[in-house]
Image (cartoon, rainbow, N blue to C red; front, top):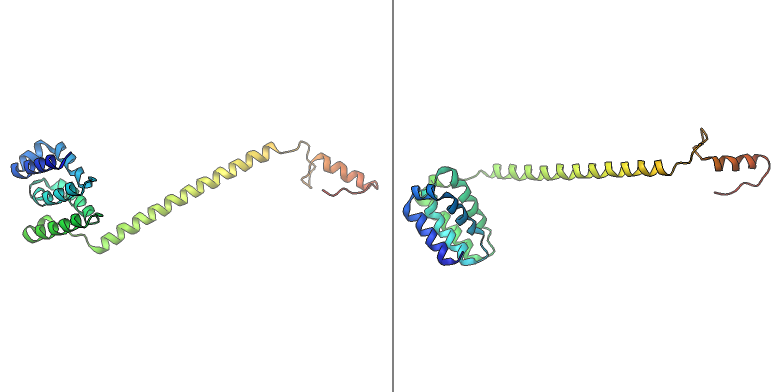
Length: 175
């Protein structure tokens, strides 16, 4: 989508209100994907429309729009970051009920939970790898066995015969 099309769709959604948003919800979702567009201008325009969109969208869509805006706070372009901060400040001043503020403790707990999940996932992968290695070793052990093992010493027939010869006075071979 070009910048003109984003401007047009943004204007349509913000000027026609909630009924238009409900009617063309799929189109709005496609428009919201432009928060991650490669063009800086489009991301900046989307941030500006966000302030108006948050006032007209249904409650269940507000958190999604907030997530898109939060991503723009970490945008590589300074102008987009400034626009995002300005948008958040404007909305929090005029409509504070529309902004959700997460507790720092909640954010830290979520981060710790994600880290713990990653650690658990890595441990499971390591366990699976160890099990595969054990299975491979068992298969190798089955293939390399010599028939007729002597009890007690764990060596095959060939080495047992060599020991018998050594008892009769032959020189012992170094193995």
